[in-house]
Image (spheres, one colour):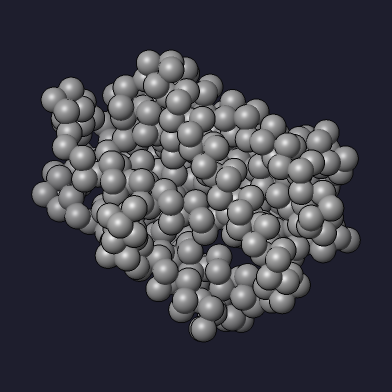
Length: 336
């Protein structure tokens, strides 16, 4: 326990995450600064996926696309197991939390996985990055259609009415296009990136810090923290921790149970256990128009921050473990 506490207190990346949250709490981005930050975050994510595209060989990308067992398991965790956990949690919490907060806890369980942080943490932990890119992108593309349908079925809101399909184009422009350009530029820049491996590591962590600051700034500016009391906040924190612990345990167990490699297990763990704030907030504004959207998204915001801290700790732990011989060979093959 003491080692765990020391790890949290001394880990530089976790300290940077905490600093980003504290800065956002004191100096949140507003107005034109928030608009500028949005473009900076977009550019950072685009650069991140350009670098992934430039580093990964076409053979590795093809293997990620064809790895249907892994992709299927991640989708089942995201849109099957997680919603069941949300239904159980929402049933148990009725009477303990306001209806809008209970609704928010169920809503977060219906969302797609994160994209940039899932892939970044997989990369830090030396997982199967090609499969992570495919899994995270498929999850978000499916979420454009699946999440509104689940909201309509589970919550009773007609999720398809007026749903904005432009998010599909946003995903393509922000993620798939930079990745494709990186693939095309790979012959020109791959040698440079191999000599400067820390560039991708810096971009991984920098993109996550920007997303954390941006998300926390939006919450501070919206003033959502003033709508709940201390007891409500404790219930949400406890529920978020339990949900994350359960899904992490389930994804880890399923990865081992189905005989996936260590790299694939890491990918399943990070891609199947997280929920997207960037996708969830715009969806909530559409799906719950006329309701207290700020309260609906509050559980998602809290869960999002907790998942980033926990997954950062897990990723650094995986990264600190020595590579097995087979893992080292697979890693070198992907970089050829």
